[in-house]
Image (tube, rainbow, N blue to C red; front, side, top):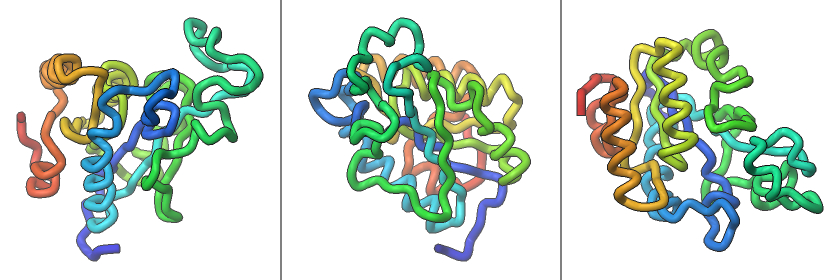
Length: 201
């Protein structure tokens, strides 16, 4: 770990799991593997600067009883997407959770919905700036960003090249909307250079 610390910032890596990234998986996001190298870069940068990394993942009961109603039809025989304990719920290679990282398990789009994420960030880590990476932008990235804005985190950053959508057009539209919602949208290289400086990208 490096010696330089941004004490009030955390990187949230959302849903970079095999069932969302592996080709052929029922909920595969078409752009997920394209953003993987940038997600890796963001994680490396965070760790080198002692920025907390919080992995936000979906894990569901085998019956699908805790998933959104519209997805319950995907669950049969304990093999639905991101079923707890199955390979599909694992992080996509080569991502891995280090002993210094944090993990939040969610069952809805937003990482804040019925989780202790807000408490971890504010009370546990003293964070007032959240930086989002992962998949997918219209759903879990957008929902988590919107909740962070609604919860009055002073700065919400979305890494445009470390997030992904089904198509480039959907990605661009969501980055546009997130800017209009008060989020800062920058790429990983800009984030690494700018540090804690908040820019209206």
